[in-house]
Image 1 (cartoon, one colour):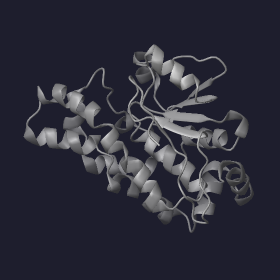
Image 2 (tube, helix red, strand yellow):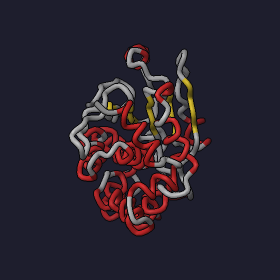
Image 3 (tube, one colour):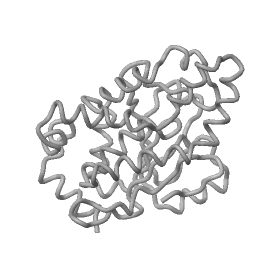
Length: 250
């Protein structure tokens, strides 16, 4: 469910999705968004009313220093960079380095996705928080809420036994919700880019099925089943997964 903010695009409640056994993810537990630094006073009041207890930020030091998250009373801020190499750093809307779009191809981005879900301290900590009801509601975000947040969201929904096709639907919703933001960035990129480079810019700024598919292909290649993946990567044993589903599903 999308929640409209003046200064935070791509903000939504991840609840409401049906699981494989017919249950439903509760609303008010898991949220995802872009960075929070441009919140208006009205945004902050709306945010405070959601009952969020933990803000989980995937951005690195440089990104966060340029657009820091606000502090809220009784809300814990956690920031653990999710990027495993320089390709994972997406430019922010405040400063759009066109060189990024000139040197990084969609194929390179797909490879990034294929690596990022594994042995990643950021997602490992995210899943610890997601298993603890006392730390929920949980908002997780990166710069624009697409790539790192997309993978983190997929991990949460996967643990809750949401079907893969639904996980893809959630991921792809970003395209409509970020359209205005992407066009604003495109105006800057277009000043120094040719037609081919602009096409590459749009390819990298899209939530594409092949990007997220690379995550699942990696899981299927390395593990015989989802339970083994969740247990090894996140210490989310079948018993712990069942406990998580008991409080997160209805």
